[in-house]
Image (cartoon, rainbow, N blue to C red; front, side, top):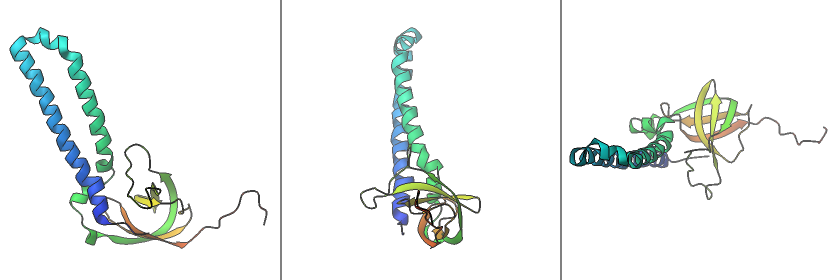
Length: 169
């Protein structure tokens, strides 16, 4: 399965950075407003309006924490690595965990029905999009970006046997 570097770059790096920039402007506006109130009306008026500022800052904190998820998960490294930096790794899947929770992007394949997963190979965590068809114990070959750990392409080399529950062989 193949993925475009540009999609990762925009969705996990550029878009979160743009929204963080917007949120920085939002916080600067709140702080400027707080300073104006203190200078014009005094500290007692500021304390009367303090809940309004706290709510604004809490909303900002929630937005920023949501936007930081893709950046912390590797999107920030996409600023410094290019598609040509990808390396090929091969190994056995040691662990899989769903990554489709809070802040996990979908990459637009087949109406977003794929799911983001973390995959551990040789003790290193990588981020891949699947349809649930990679299993623990499979041998895979992947082309990955070494710093961000995003998988650009993956192929299953050797599957573990799929046993149907309740069927004796």
